Length: 504
Image (tube, rainbow, N blue to C red; front, side, top):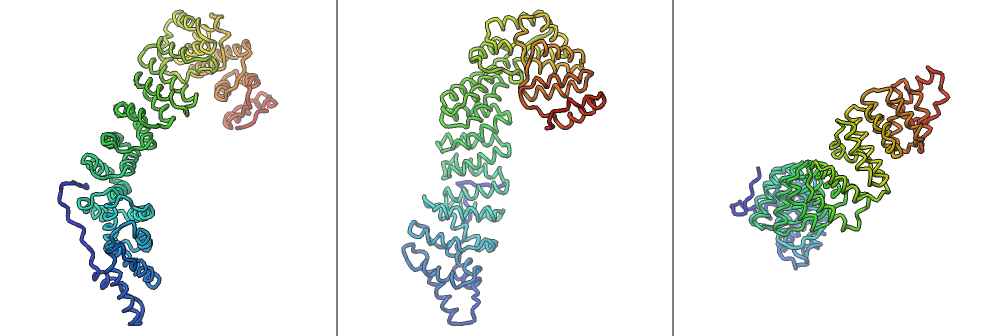
């Protein structure tokens, strides 16, 4: 494991010998002795003057050499120049030109690699590194990330304490999936108030989230915020989303108020956070999120509806049906139908042990409600009966309570068919069809029609399918597997004229 301590003594990266480069690597191809001498003279002049950023000759000499030497030769010279040059704003274009001359295929040469590593460390002493140079160096080291480059880069961190070299090192560690080492380096730098880029902190948090190490990502985030480091919304959103996804509510609780109050979080993350917190009944957190959401101009009404559903479900999770229902009433404007599937915790609180007491509760809640809430209350009760396998009780409740019959809608039929499907009660299907006819119901949802076809098809009342489909208010296409079964039935009973529906 990589251990980097700011107080420890690390051996320095050795300086590079010009003679070593000249004698060991520069083997010019020309047979002309004077040509060789001229080239060697230019190389020596370049090396002798490279330390002075104000000298105008090195860029001219290097450009001339680059036009006369093979790429592999100029690549070696470029690496030596990079290890010797003193970066400044005056030679940035020269530096960029030299860097572009380094051939990626030659970087396996460790002397060249060491020259580039030294270049990274020296650049880290400067507050402003040209973006083009940064991009090139990062690309090189990501391409050639290995244990050697990581070890050599880490050795220079004490002498060259900078943000750029740490960024390159962390990027390599993450590329090689050495997440613990990257985490250790970033945490130690933050704790010791060392130099580190906000982008380094962000990519560390993001990668730790991607591999489900949310707790460690939270530790990095905590240190970053403690020392007022910038962490941008996208990273915060990734962190919160992953914490919510993994059910890390302690981590969520630790950061959410601080994060939400200080910066913009994606709307979808806010909604998902609210929906997950509802499962734990964290009401105060839910109301905090709603307050933040209500102050955001970009927050669409449908997102707010989902948060309101989460709050109602949060109350239901705490076993408080009355508070949940009161909250639903307070948010309801009567314009939309509420669906049972969105309120599983609320449905779970309804007891169907005694039909009469269930009817009493239902009627009490329906007395002062708007029509859409009356329908919703009826559907909640019917859904609970059907879920418990009491389809006959659900039908009897409807039959014996005329006051609720005007509020039967498509969702009621959906719950009843579910109940008949669970119990395989064919007589119930006949009663459901009669209820549809008596109430002259229409259907606008694909899921209802799909369930009608699949459930009735397996019963003796399959021929009701066509009459129900005639009540569809949308174009309905039968799924291929169901169409095949229906076709067999129609051929058996000589009723193929009804097969006028398209196949999905």
